Length: 228
Image 1 (cartoon, rainbow, N blue to C red):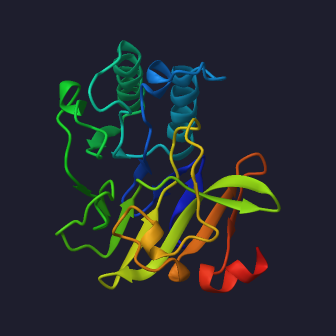
Image 2 (cartoon, rainbow, N blue to C red; image 1 turned 135 degrees about the horizontal axis):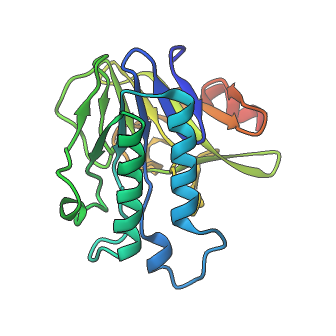
Image 3 (cartoon, one colour; image 1 turned 120 degrees about the vertical axis):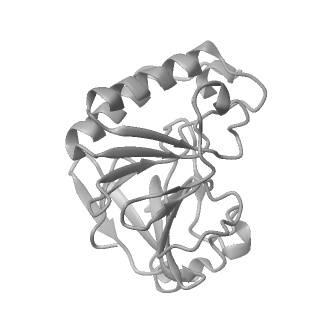
């Protein structure tokens, strides 16, 4: 994964000239019983625009769970989706939504794909079910991984070289900051919801410090757990 660039819960793949983010859960704010401390629409759109400015990708892929509610499409979710699509268009990037398990209403907004292959052969899918397509690398979401280091919870990426059908897997953290995340410190393969992770010990956590603009790559969990 030396070619990938990480920033604010997204990943940019230079060989494909593609930015991938997952688990936006648009409309979570509108469907919550609790008033959330940040405006969802402003938070998601401003961060998305920053990523577009940083990487200037040819295409942007949303790796599933674009929406939050299964059974309805709040106006707020529709408006935020339109904002994101317009921002991508203004940046000259193709906008490619991929279906996740939450996205039963996504077809009301766009024509989504079950999965999407990037120009470098990487396959992007949500990760809630096994893909029958063969690829050298899979980028998925679904589990919202986070890691606790020195008592602080941080969103993290999980990188597994040759861990799924001898292909590489990258699990993305949730792009929404309203998801607390599943703490992966002590999780084994069977604890993950995605079938793309069968043994956690082979996966390396990758953590971003966006304030310092630094990316920290740690050893695989089989070694790293003893240090946590």
